[in-house]
Length: 510
Image (cartoon, rainbow, N blue to C red; front, side, top):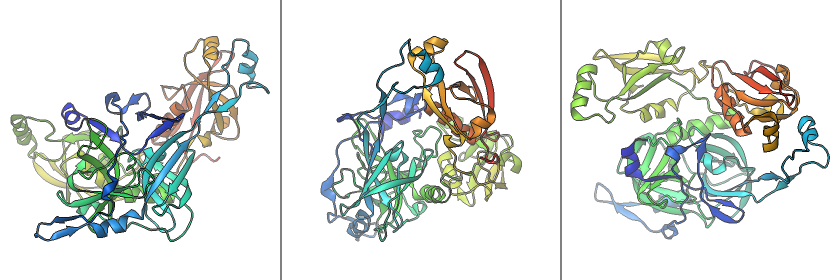
């Protein structure tokens, strides 16, 4: 995010996850790998909300001079918005590996050795929206990320255990399920038909005190904030109050239709001060449908890198750009990915994309939003300007692996191995300062590659591996690549080094 945007927005908070550790309220920092989002700014959880507006008789004057009554929209919304409690259980070792524990280090934990002790769980809260009467609920990924247990409380105070169907960090969406029938449902509307200035409601259940409603207008559309670390962003901006616990709640139009999932607030203090952002249903509908059917999102990729033509250019620079390109709005293609959909279709560097399937495109967030509705294999018509002339090119979209095949859900389970982090003394004995040990191997990809128990992973695909999270991140990236292979470098406790190639493609039989 550039400096001017940071100055305007202050602190961007991923709203709705108040983390409690050992009985105290803690500041939650959202991180991706070793880098904290937005240059290590803290994404603080706020602690206030205006519950006084619940079903308050609220009317505003419309353009025609007639009052806009939002009570019907509120009535339709509050019963379908739920409170979500997520619990992450943590363990710690009762004692560290000592210098006389080398037998255990080389041959694995022995009976009476180190024990895992349960510590205080981490508890987070958020909201969710029931989208089907059989209990499917959409919320934010950050509300349930890493949760071992999920509990859902309805507006009528009934509580159900929740099951995570799938998550998508790229859009910060998650789909969970509660068992039962005839649950209240919020109808899904078309976020693309929203207009700037249109009245909306933000509905959440932040404190398990039944649903809360706040009102505001659509301040802007297709906002990109840079908070999802290369994720898909095309937010609806609203001044309806969004605070702690509202993450995953509903943004509702005046007809009582769901048009967005509340996700982020911007504030200099961490409390609401006028900026709130919601994920539009144009993105949500496709994501939750894929999570339900496949367990993972079938993401269509165009295969370009670029930026808006105007950007932060001064007027004289913009005029020079217009003279060169013949256009001032659109996406200037800076790179065409080899073997990607755009290259195969004939899109070139310095082309300016100005439309997709008849819709005008002026910035990258709009293009991302439109692509997010499609599956690999779908054909789209890209309108572009080349050498100051309009041109329409049909593109067959592909997935991140460069094919049109269905991408199957996969996690570390297919490796068929268990892992444990190395203690300080174990690292000292081997002269290393990082590594992840294979504590067990069963049938799976690692056994097929020849990896044995006690092998210590040092690097995978060139990345240092110090934890299971490190391995998971590299694994997910490899699953999105055309090769789908893990090149693993490591050592045995004897100090002998080995290199392995582990095929993680779907073509390999388990």
